[in-house]
Image 1 (spheres, rainbow, N blue to C red):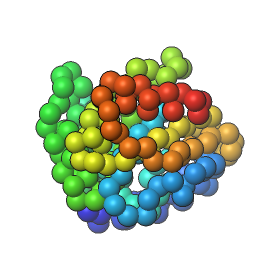
Image 2: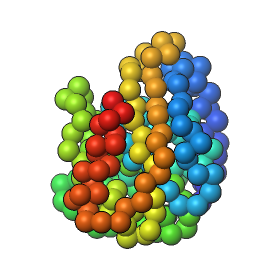
Image 3: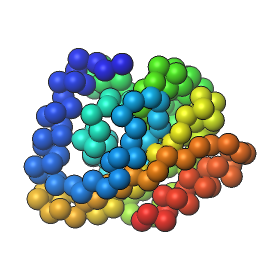
Length: 185
């Protein structure tokens, strides 16, 4: 499910990210090279998506707020395989679209906080990541981004943990996912 635009932009994004931001990648071997997977983690900055794109050769289909789908960005995001989410309600359509990608053995990237934390600390998690994982029998690879986005600083780090399976009650599984990520901060 790679789009031509994604295949074109990914090496450019990786190059720019690695040259100008110089992140440290930890646990990349925890991202499976094939099969469905959900990458779920802390959202610190609008550039977090670029960091995830740079971390894996696989196409990552992100869930992103529908407010971004305006003008030219609408065409760009649709051709990059992003999934619009209406955050003002429980958006069943975005969940269905994400589950369709997972059923095609794709990678979903999601920030369960639903927004960037903006220095407020780890926010409560929305239930979507664990719900789609359970509905599609997909494992979640928790990740955490720490450090600052500064040019040439090498202070930014993205760490991926071993994949977890969602089995039990969704609220408890959501707390478990949040606690894993909180422990990496």
